[in-house]
Length: 120
Image 1 (cartoon, rainbow, N blue to C red):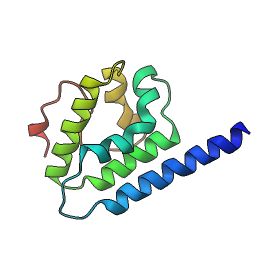
Image 2 (cartoon, rainbow, N blue to C red):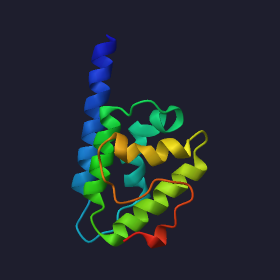
Image 3 (cartoon, rainbow, N blue to C red):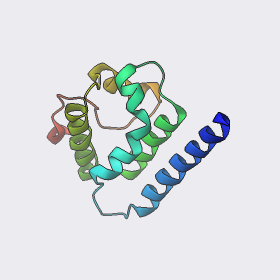
Image 4 (cartoon, rainbow, N blue to C red):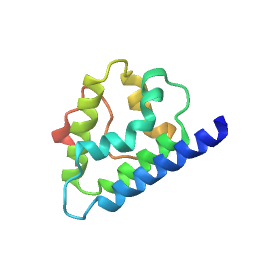
């Protein structure tokens, strides 16, 4: 039974990510709700460390695809910074290491102290 629940959960996460990517229109800035949805599967890693899940890394890859331009990356940076500062228990070191652990060059530092205006 647990395996079915896990498969259903994975499928729902995939559908949510797919819908977010489809909903993204070229030329429109990414929204924080999209950033949050992409990274929702990463919350346990961001708090506890270890190895990020496949869903987490998939969400990070989707975030990268949804934020191709400078304005998108700066907006994503602000969203990531806000999440890092408002959700209790997020470890800044885990946040900084997430892109390399997922082998995704996000182009945006994930840190509480980053200057998002410096993102190119």
